[in-house]
Image 1 (cartoon, one colour):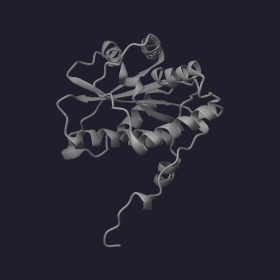
Image 2: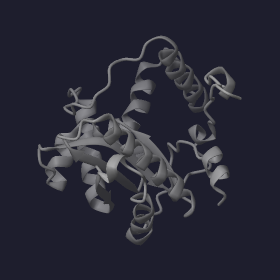
Image 3: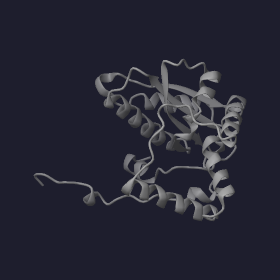
Length: 221
């Protein structure tokens, strides 16, 4: 696939087919992804890849914690958005709820929708990216962000869809238990990956972007 086409057509997938994704395919994706540039070649990333029965156990435990109202334990949790960032978040939610037929006043349906994130959107595979807690320099996090994009683009080559979401790492104690991740490591991102379900309504969403000229200052052009 053409690189520019891949960048423009990639979108978040929130509904997947049940078909499993082979270890060989994920290995090829990660082999490509670790070529991502990082500041001073620190390569600040490590992975956990879960599928099959292991993922089902983790999914059920994270979903249960959410339904019980357990407070997330990951120290990477973001602060609430404000201003234009809050507006963009709300606009996205409005479009998703419209596609899913969820009324604004239907709190139970909205909660069920949110729980999908804590269940990794029922994807057949989940990739968790973590790093040493000592890596706090902004270029380290920039490298992990670039890595996430590379994984998502590489996945398209194999007909796979992805969704980067923080709900998947909020209950980091679950992942630590199953994958034996030490406290010296910080879970940074989760990527749900699988074959997109074309009939899932939310998958029809193409999120908006600000025009380049409204967010760019040109110098010397």
